[in-house]
Image 1 (tube, rainbow, N blue to C red):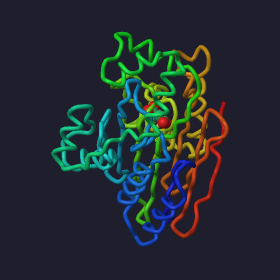
Image 2: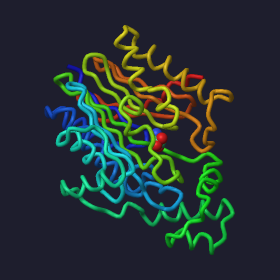
Image 3: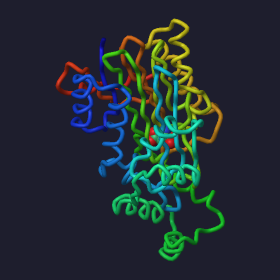
Length: 320
Ligand code: ASP
């Protein structure tokens, strides 16, 4: 059976290499996917995931994460989780311990505390600096910034968000998809979401069918980029459903990405945020063939089969 791990181009090689080595040693897909996501959550150089993720407009890091097993189609997710070191593990535990799929906000934090998940201040000095820089860049005075930083935001936070998301900003939700030697698919998605978002904004990453889907019989999918688009389209489930209906992985990826490109174009509906005006989807079919498709060029994924020693870097196919 063709075992492999696929993740974002931004993920460090050693994280993917560890995953491939574990697959080679016979580890199940679920363990490999969770571990790779945990490694990225700890990576302080990554400003879109876990520790050191960019905060919401008021300076709090709110994490979204989800986990899905293709063998059972069981899934677990958390949204707007604060100050927990490994959101992905809390998401997986929601799947394993509760008769629920998605916990949000206060309830997600309650559950994390109850299962003994490790706490961590997720706002790194570097991410805080980027946040303060953005508040300055949108014209706030030192006194206004001081008020926000000390928990006294202005009444009009909507306006703040609209000003802060006015230009392109980097983002790279962690998508990790794994197929093990038994042919099982597991997907882990973890992110601090769109930077400078309205507090409580939940993206596609914890929405099963939008930012993530897995079904061993047909394939799996995960998304990165503007979550509002993949929620509206149900992109991950749609791609897997197309494969179920007999489309190839490439056809499914192109069809879904073309629809997302239409939704992102002028007249596509919605007042899209300039700072993330694109989407990428990664797919893997039931035989372990993987591919990536994006509404803009220059987005990469890393793939490594269990029998390879280093990941291959592949540019996502640009679909307009
Ligand atoms: N998809 C994520 C979201 O909308 C953002 C990202 O890819 O970084 O929250």
